[in-house]
Length: 513
Image (cartoon, rainbow, N blue to C red; front, side):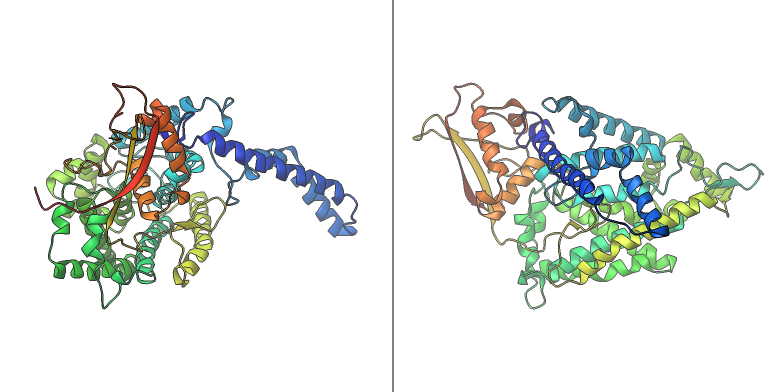
């Protein structure tokens, strides 16, 4: 993060914070002027006047003013507040410790949940706030569809787990005893909300393809997969084998893709347990195939998670291979859980606490309200991809690869001491560059700079990627944080470069091993 949004990064987070603060100060000033003018108007009499006086008193309170000035009015260019912990930083010229600290805290919280096999609201809330912090100031580096997808799934998970307890038996009672281990079952409404979340992801991905201007996704052509593997952002060692499959197989892949994204998602919402399980397995297998064919960041890994909600505990324990079961239920508490389930020693508690039921119902109603615009977008002729319609970005619409390029355009950056050369190329960690270098396997890790270089090459003009100017300038200045994002510095053992340029090469997948 330091090389991307740090103090000496390509697009420092400080600039986004400063710009949002200026917007907030301007809105606060306009409101104060409006409050002065409001006093000149008569709000009527009787109950109406009392209501307006109460409303004005609440909106003018210190708490409301602090909320507006420090959060709600501080908005990005799309008019959305920026929920980020970086507002707490006293010195915005020194945000690198904050970026490192938040990343380390997130890693620690994740490790705790992985090691214990359980989570509670506070652990997930910490991860959610950290994710939203980076999304708010991440600029183009955190503009991918899987960033809000991760945040939305984490928001759902907040209403699945206990408030405090880390007990994996939370919500179960032992059949052979009268003591209750935990009184609350997992809220069914939230589980259905998670299934809907997966449904809209897959349906959105399918609809964006058939409504796009690319004929390669449509009947009569169906050639998108001829080119997909060769032109995807970051290929892996197996990509070439997928690419060189026969054309009839690639056409079958397009038909299969449409089935998985446009037909199979309806199985996820069926009342039949068997149909839901079939739908979940189809989505999991589809994502595994995508994982094996290219480095698509953590997108496919993330999409597998809600599909698991279509597979109940009994199905998993009866059908997982022993090795996978050992990995999945590897912690002592999880192994105890499996033994109790297998022996029938526990059963689900029948009654849920009134407060938990109320919170789950309110969450379900909130998501239903926010998803209205998502559904409208899915039916729209000009469907938006990876967009949100609420200011807090709690709910989004998704889609991917509506258009597939037919040639791979690779953006190459070189520099020299003078215009006559010799020119030295900057090599990236995973982006194709050196034709002799074998593509790596990095999924689910995400090299954000390498992905942005692919997007810049596809867009055709540098003006559409203003960050690229700043990146080239940082390379000329040999900024350490930025250079560390690359595979190495071609000028490390020589004098500094003075001239830099970029050009686009056309690349093909080699038939050689």
